[in-house]
Amino acid sequence: MELNQSQKEALTQLLKEALFYWEAHLMKSKVELAEACGYWKVHKSGTKNRTRTLDRYLDPEKLPNNPRWQEVIKTVRFVQKQPLDRECKINLETKTNRWIEEIMRQNNT
Image 1 (cartoon, rainbow, N blue to C red):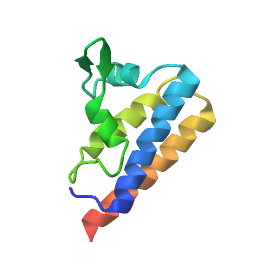
Image 2 (cartoon, rainbow, N blue to C red):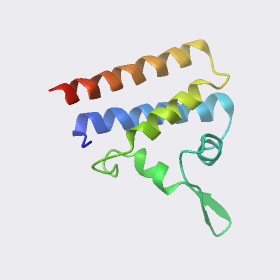
Image 3 (cartoon, helix red, strand yellow):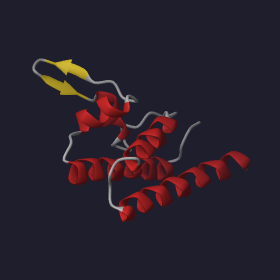
């Protein structure tokens, strides 16, 4: 399903927020998130591990025309299951549900 620019921005913002909570509250890296959730490939580049696809999903300008938005939602839900503050979990849940409702409305029109 092709997303409009506003939906792309909201999707990338949702993923950025989940990544922020992962990094700030759990003190883990983006690579660790990709490895832990299993939805994003981690590529070895020399001595570093890279998350090229995940990186594209963090930038609305680089997001594919038909993004695998379900992978983003699964990643956000994975982060929600981690030991985060209740407020963080509620915030992610609210924004995730809002984004899904918007997509469902688009499909019904």
